[in-house]
Amino acid sequence: DSGVTQTPKHLITATGQRVTLRCSPRSGDLSVYWYQQSLDQGLQFLIQYYNGEERAKGNILERFSAQQFPDLHSELNLSSLELGDSALYFCASSVVAGAINTQYFGPGTRLTVL
Amino acid sequence: GQQLNQSPQSMFIQEGEDVSMNCTSSSIFNTWLWYKQDPGEGPVLLIALYKAGELTSNGRLTAQFGITRKDSFLNISASIPSDVGIYFCAGQYANNDMRFGAGTRLTVKP
Image 1: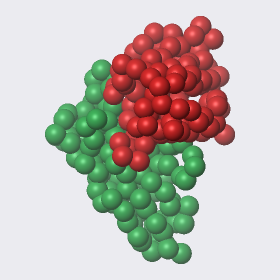
Image 2: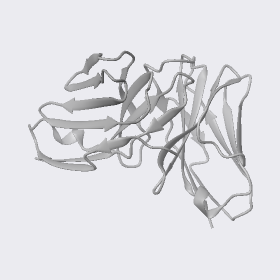
Image 3: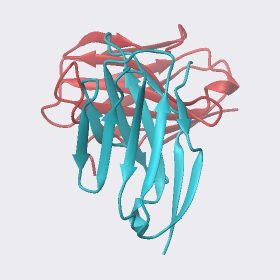
Image 4: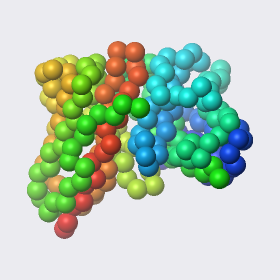
């Protein structure tokens, strides 16, 4: 158990819908990262937050958005869902904002878009 | 998105053998990272490298940050069955954006 929690574990929805994925970082970690893992695109970094502020942006679509709340949990919002958005979405946390020397991943949320 | 070139794609080795895998890119990175992912689990960060030429070990794992800052390798010595999994490299830019390799799937035969 990494100490990072993600909910829900599984999510099945239809094209065009909107979903919210939730992540709680490890106690004491200020930085949260979101990643997408799919069969055709592999692992992709989406976005990073540090202490409530956006810190880095990767291959995140405009239909996707995220935020980190004052209690440090984070939510990833996916809207106008397409079949290709079906993937595993991982959240990870670390203490620092910059160079990663320790990083802990959650168990992931498996999103299926039908 | 642009991926790193990670090779080999898969490896089948005998327990006790050494393993070597590498990643190359046309981009320069500030940080190289190596992860391992077991089936049904999230990735686990194994080693992080911050300086060109840096050689870092973590138990039986050794990784190096290439001098050109465009490549990195990971070696595993004396492999054991629990080394089975998928190993990913990742390069992190100065702005903290990251790119991942497609992974090396390692199978260790006892």
